[in-house]
Amino acid sequence: MQSNIIINNLSELPVAAKQLLQAFPDKKIFAFYGEMGVGKTTFIKAICNELGVTDTISSPTFSIVNEYVSAKGDKVFHFDFYRINSINEVYDLGYEDYFNDDAYCFIEWSEKIEDLITSDYIKVKITKDGEKRIVAFS
Image (cartoon, rainbow, N blue to C red; front, side, top):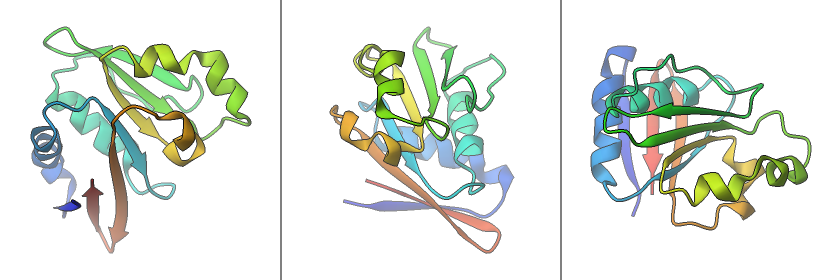
């Protein structure tokens, strides 16, 4: 089943993040899809804020993964696979340890590693329509 959340402006991000988390209370792995600049990182920041992450949340474009801790003490991993050149880099990173850690995993550029995401995950696609964003998830 696919559902949508419409985000008309940045002030609606916290509500949208809460809606996504509430729709999947037992899921921890979220694979994000969308073109460059559509707002994947910005939406993930809102989700991390909703989880109570107090660290500075930034794009892991160069580090590939950033680790945070939620207000409840849960681990939160934020991945950005845009800059990987081969799947071997993902193996070298030890991705299995992250994905199997019962931690929240938010994955940008998921299409580059889709075959490696074997756990039950939520697919989140963000598209633009003028100034608003449409977040489709299933």
